Length: 335
Image (cartoon, rainbow, N blue to C red; front, side, top):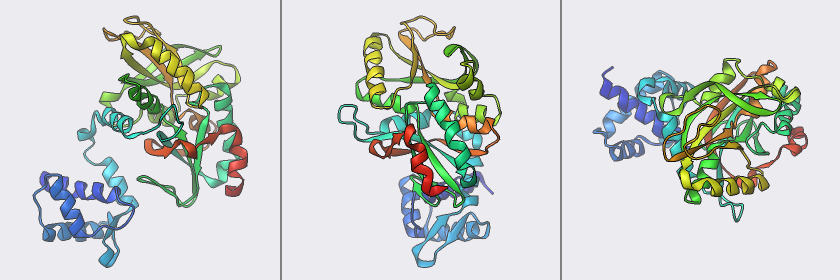
């Protein structure tokens, strides 16, 4: 397969991924043309027939095609080298895409979505609540999606429940709406001693990875939320942000306001030009440590409960979120 052909097929899969209903070959061709690809309706139909045979797409007759699970997997795995730095791009995209207004408490926030087997839900709830209670979560809110539900481009498998946790990129969006640009530098494993952050023991820069760093740490078994929640000593996921020097007082004020609406996520705010937990800060900026959004789900992996997570998965209305204290009541009908 030529590189040009492969790019076109991946573009077709991306177009289908972004639609919640089947698309005709003519609509796909129109979008391809808008993206700068030189193609024709006949060529698109030829590609689609080949992708049908490879189980990347499903033919719904006159209604058009939909992407299959295999197609989604192909799309996520293909041409990984081209996606280097895409985590930074995705952070920026979600930051600009959210619409949450701190004053009116309305609009959308960025969420991560994690799949948990329904049979493990009863055991999972008290573990997740431990992370929220311990103060190691991004805020105190979350949401639940039933099997078969679709959120943006994510579909919840029929045997799973979707747990929507607030992504720390939500903080970027709120600060941007207040005129404060945020530079997300890296995600890392943060050592906690007696409940306080002490140092980063591992880190992954956002501009050099195709995956969310916390997803990597979770699946690698490197976290220790059990220790953090039981003794105050452990390893949790956190991110490092930078803000303009003159914004420190306003950042701290906004951090307090975010706490009151259940979206608090700042662990520490440094001083202009000064290292924070031995991490040097770019000249003209100050550093801050924010809590990882996937933390409530990470503890499940430590306890042998398998999960699949998608960081920055979608945008959700703030009003659709609820307090973690309601979790037991909310999942009753799904057990």
